[in-house]
Length: 246
Ligand SMILES: [Zn+2]
Image: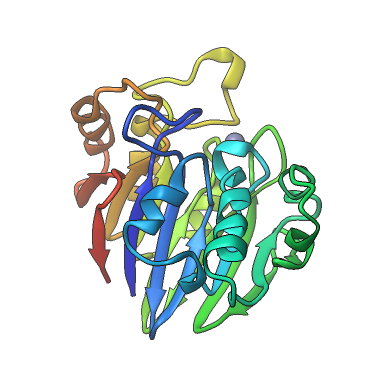
């Protein structure tokens, strides 16, 4: 299984960056997790839009789903023969982005599969397990497994024992860490810090930890150091182009 980071910025895409977006490949199948703002140009540097076999969305915030629109446009206008794109998401999560465009042909460019947080189901060669993790809107953490390896992704989530359970023994925990040490009171419980994510990775006995969704301008070294206070495995920070083989 191969993980390629397309973007790892929280909130908005910074210069030359992109919000959440991860390409996960196994056995020739390409699963795009969270098409956040500005990930499509990063994706197209690697593969054509038609090469994506399915999309999996953690939650409906636009920094995780807005680029579904240019992805579908690229498949329709650039690739012509792309089949409808299976898109897995919580109920209603895709409705705003799919309502953005009035091009009639775009209606048939995707095939929405809604799942409930807690469901387990396959996408191509991947086994997906999901859990509802705390956020300001419904958010599914997902564990994606294939070939004896697993990636556990939080979406956006405040600290939760459910994440520790979902990520138990995972090969890599890809965790939202918007802040470094503490979450401002307005976002307490619905977003996370590198410090707390390190504790959760330790409790889950994850082999590796990749911090993502850092607010633009965050000091990466400080984030890694904060996570490293309780997690002693490999720690990375999601940056466009980062690739991990599992
Ligand atoms: Zn969010």
